[in-house]
Every structure is written in structure tokens, then in C-alpha cells.
Image (cartoon, rainbow, N blue to C red; front, side, top):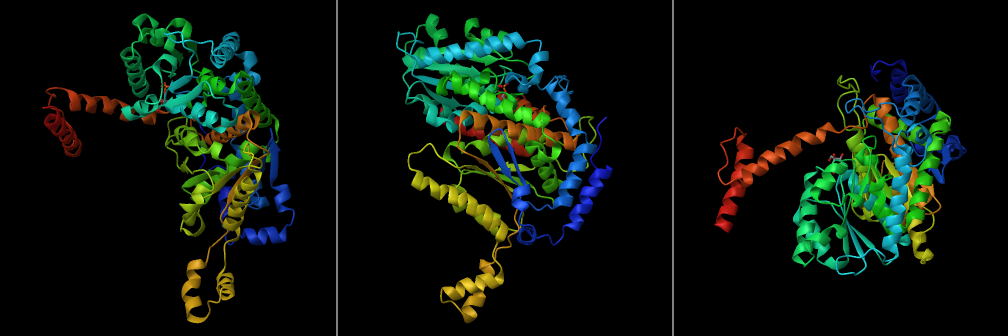
Length: 549
Ligand code: F6P
């Protein structure tokens, strides 16, 4: 039975802190406590979190930590790592941590298979990287196209982009996810079929987008002259449904298994991460896992007040439930990390975008809001205006590698400076008096200054975290991703929901099949659909009748 958040004594204490914090000013808090930045700084696995620019004081943090105790988050975390059924709707454990060798690896029945798959990933990666994997004409594979979507796409695509500095000239990895045929066609336009290998990544091996794209890829090879009996040389698959992959026509030896205790959005540590090993090498992949393992250790062992994922999860609950914030902006100041927000959208919103608790009882408090963002400094020239002066408060995560893999350190310093300055500007804002003084310094005074000044005022007191690392390496990246995974799951435990299922995506998929039949059937049976849906279907059919006769 879930402990409902509302009504918990600790939760009431958190709400009381909200009332106690009315009028709280970050400027004043820093002035009153010069050591604030120092004691609101945490470290783990090569990452440092500065959470001093949050709208919390010591009493707020104490109330939030009491909430974590009352919810017994630590016990849930231990159960999770020990392989208990944390996903009761699907009757599954959530053991992605075991894939990186953390604790539960010891209790895992498939431990030997996990190790064997790791060895196969390494061997496939080195064969490809050495040019020893050849296609039907005997030419070495130079391009690998990962076909997958959601968790079978976002993790590997994000990580290979982030570790671009480790990717050699060959093989190059490409990622195709969308059922829009343009996605595959645009990717294949620049590729040579004889030297292209496809990785069909699908945990279920039943996902429409992936199967459609895999079929199209097979047709592309055949049209280019690949003999039928040689097609298998050009396909690998990763799936927990090995039988379906084989039935699809992928050679059994070319299918890498995964297990139902790895959720799709937590799966980049499994063979779903194969493109990462291919692009960056098996050693880098091992380091990625080692970084995540270091964060696992921290999450399990660190006391609550020093526990990075837990503190971040508590702040998430604070902003969402106590202050009513509807979204979190994630802004990495590193071009390689540009896809972090997109990756986190699935991780956070598919995990915690729920309306009922683990026990099926409706939640009485809001769960996950929207996660969004883009790489800095690009966002500064688009949405930061709203962050600084909009009517909503949007908490921000700044992710800041201090050094770049570019040789142009002088230019990179501008990037770092902008990140630091943004968190400062959000916090400080600009008062009316400061706005008038700035205008005066520019020679604007009198009525003109009074007309302009209100537009220059920035409320400030806008919260942010800054997550700092020396530079993006496989180790720090593994730690960063594991940090967000644990934060997400810890927030799920606070809210009392199941962070590991995703039934909300199913209805749309099923209706999509019915609508597809209505679009393409020669004589669709009369269906009992609403007038809007019927009209949209009719529009498609009318256009295609007139185009195709
Ligand atoms: O869109 C829902 C979803 O089931 C995700 O949870 C999953 O990561 C994605 O589809 C892809 O699923 P699969 O790996 O089974 O193709």
C-alpha cells in the first residue's frame, strides 16, 4: 500500500516551510550567510552540485529530508538494487544498475549472460573498428545505422554525440528513429549499401517505427544488389524478444539479448549501448559503466543530506508540489551534451508522468512536470527572456563542463562565463533603482528613463542548480546519466508512483493501427468514430484518391 504524500506529517511540514519562506530572497540569503555556497555544495563520482541558488533555507532542507525519511526512500532504493519487484504492474525488477556491476549483479540469475553479452559487445565493436566486418561485396563496414526509438534510440544517440571527441572516422554511427520515411531516407542518401550495417534495437521487437524502418532498410540493400543470402551480414539486432528478431530474418548469431528487468529508458547500459561501444570503443563503454557505478555507490551509501540524487529529487518535489512549478529547464553548456534535454524528457516524463500511485489510487499531488531545454548559449537567444522576466518560475539545471575537448580554450571560456553569468542573473535580477542607474549611465534620464525602466526590471530570485564536471569523459558522463536516473526514481518514490511502467503510451499506438487501416483500406468498414477524426481520415483519403487515382 502506497503511503500517500498528502496527509503525511512530513509533507505538512514541507508545506509549512512554503509559507515560512514567503519573502525569501536569494540575495539576502547569500548576504546573511557567506558560507551558503560552501555548505550547499555536494560531490560524487567526479560531479559537483552547487544547489545554493535554490529557494530553500536550512529549515526547508530539513523538512524535505524528513519527508525522504518518512517516505523511506532509502529502503526503496535498497529493494531496487536487491532486485525486488519495483515495477509491480509488469511484475518486473528494475535492475539496470546490475548491468554496470552494482551490488545486485551478485544476486542476478543472468549474471553470466550479462558478462557474456558485454564480451560480445566488445568483440563486435573491435571487429567493426578494425575494419574486419565486411558486407556482401567483401568491403569493410564503414557506417552503422541504429534503428530504434525511445529508449532504444535516445540514450545511444545522446552518448555518442556527447563523446564525439572519441569517435574515429570509421565506423560512423547514425541514428534513425522516426516512422516518417524521410528519417531513414535522409540518412541513407549519403551511405554506400555495401559498407553499411544496421543495428535493429528494440526491446520488444514489436515497435511499429522500428520494424517499418528495418523493412525499408532491407529493401534498400536488396535494391542495391545485395543477394538475399547475404543480407544477414548487414543486420544485427538487440532485443529481449530474440525469437521475434530471428523470425524477422536476423541471424541468431547476430542477435544480442537483453532482459525484461531493464526498462527501455534505463537501457543504454545493456546491448542497446552497442553503438556507443562501436563509435567510441569498448574501453570507453566500460568507463561509462564505471562512472555510473560510482554514482550507484554514492546513491546507496551517502547520507541523505549529502546524497546528490536524493537532494535533487527533494528539490524537484519542492518546486513541483510546494511552489507549483510546472517545468524544469535543463541547459547543458556543452555542444556535445546538446541532446541531454531530449534524453531526459523520456527518462523523467515517461517514468514519472503518472496520475495514480503504485497501488492504483489517484495521486492527490502533482507528479512530474515538463522537462525541456537546449544547449547553452543557444537558449540565451531564444527562451531565456522568459526565464528571466516571464510570469512563471522555471527552475533550471545548468550542466557545466569546465574544460572542452576543443583546442580553442579561449573561445570556450566565453561559454563557461555565460553559463555562470546566467545563473547569477537569474538569481540577482535587476531592481528598479538599478535599472534607472544603468539608464542614467547611458545618458537616459527623466521621463524617458521612467518609461523604459519597468521593462528593464528583472525579478531575480529565480532558482537554479549548477552541476559541474572537469570535462565530459565516459566516466563523468556515466555518472551524470546515473545521477539523473536516480533522481528520477527517487522522485517517483517520494510521489509513491511506479517509475518503471508506461501504460500511457499504449492507447495512442492501438488507435494508430485502427486509423491506419481506415486511411489505406480500399473500402474501410463504417467505423464509429467522432466527426473530427472521421473528417481527418476523409481528408487523407480524398487527397490520396486524387493523387493516385
Ligand atoms: O514509446 C514507448 C516505448 O515502449 C518506450 O518505453 C520504449 O523505450 C520505446 O517504446 C521503444 O520500445 P522497444 O525498444 O520495445 O522498441
